[in-house]
Length: 318
Image (tube, rainbow, N blue to C red; front, side):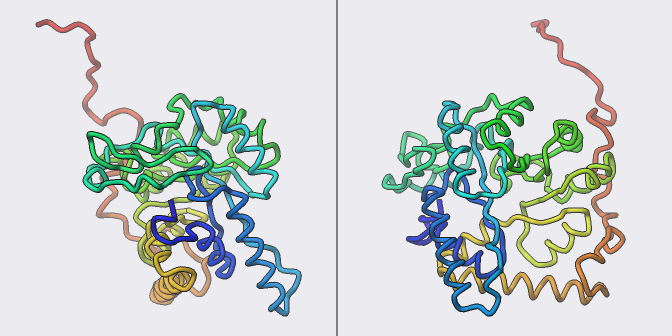
């Protein structure tokens, strides 16, 4: 919902990403349709080519974040459109089968003029207050299963499928067996399941229990990435890339120039961290550059609780 922050929303974000070489992931809940975003991205790329001495440079990829609609025919049409308009991967979102209770959002009335053209959802207010996520996420299908990876591939053949929202090493292993191309460790910005683990701890959990995942698939991560040092830590723990949401939206208040400034700040922080740690290239990062002793006790070793073994009795004695 980038138009909350800037009149051109995700279109302006796409222009800045093209200039900066940063991939953009467009959501089903985008303020604009994907063709409108792609038009802005392609125009920006053409403008860059006309003023560049390297006319053969390729555009920065655009990905698509899919929230599956309860009316599957709508999602099927979106998947076909995504492929036709040149998105480079599908990020299948699984960490928000229902919308979390976002109490701070409910205290603010929603602008009832807001609409997400691809999902068809419109903002409104009710007896609980505002909360854009709750009110505009009602279309999401909570019945998505592992079998739906094949369904996505059927309607977007040839596009890589990334499972977005992995929060345990068990799901990382299952995703590997399901044949997805990459996993995206995410807790939906901490706004889905209350008290869900920090994503940096999930990276450690995967390293501890199934490190082969990092060899078989690319691993991305978001959540809590606010400084360049956070990017460095995630890469040291095996992430191939990080995603950032709120930081880019805050920067979007200031348009393309604000986003460029935000990325420049992150880059300065990342470079400084690398220099302080004695490396000159990101291909030199490794876990030994981090001291995780303060959080190692938080990393589970199995699906079971370490000592509480009881199981619920379906019949009450009262």
